[in-house]
Image (cartoon, rainbow, N blue to C red):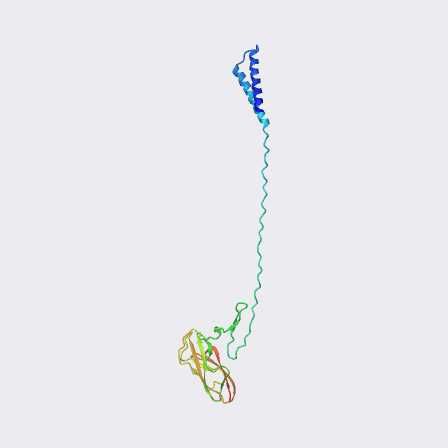
Length: 232
């Protein structure tokens, strides 16, 4: 189709040139004529080409969808209420100092501990370890001689001196009287306190209390207990 159109245009151009040459009008410059004809032909050619080309439909730019705003979720936690402390009341043995109670972690066994500050006198203090002889319930005969031994520890900040003595704080010392320590016990050391005793003549259960005193007669430390049975 393009070749056929171009041939028509070239033929028309040649005919125009020959006609122009045969007319009696003033002679024109051949170069001018050729330039004009070529310009007309080129313009016609581009107009034809432009008409044949289908214009491109512009593609619309894609629309941007806005991102959703982030949602912040704050975690919540539920705390169990604190347990309520349970007070345990302790009834001490007569002549002894009541221990204080230390509460441990909920669910654990609570044990009573003695407050050392309540047992001390100055720098002196004493803790009871165990009964070495004559535990509670021991049976002796009337007028029988025996020796009671307590194992104790120096929990103070001063050593125990020779002049320290073991004294009964009850009405009856069973013939022991004042018992001098007669030895040096360093701080944190364990020691044994002995009391030579004589059982009463009358059958029954007997209990007495004993304490350690310094050279000035000031008692300190835990109260020691003696309990035994006299049987015929």
